[in-house]
Image (cartoon, rainbow, N blue to C red):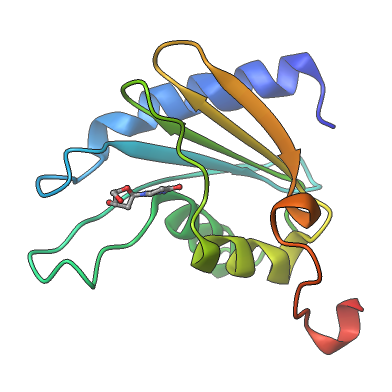
Length: 134
Ligand code: THU
């Protein structure tokens, strides 16, 4: 599990990023921070669409930002939401995170100060993994 200082740093980045959440349809504002083994952070927010189905989750935006900058491995993902619900990652996001970090730490937190921590492998047991990662 990541240390307290790293967790605080990720939480603070998520709190800063959430202003850009685009969630006019659900009203559920989410941000996410990906940490890579080299110590770099990548943020993301949910981006909704009037078609609903094209909505993209905050954590997938953060993962894709990291990968598009050349990252191949993820150490931790923090997902943050405004309100009292915790933003547990959806199934699609779990599968996308698994591609780059089946061992990664997943932290979910909200603006009321609730926080829970998991391993991605607990949230997605018996995953279908890329052939070189089995
Ligand atoms: N959402 C995320 O961005 N991440 C999560 O972990 C849970 C769900 C977004 C997608 C959509 O914009 C809104 O939350 C409501 O489902």
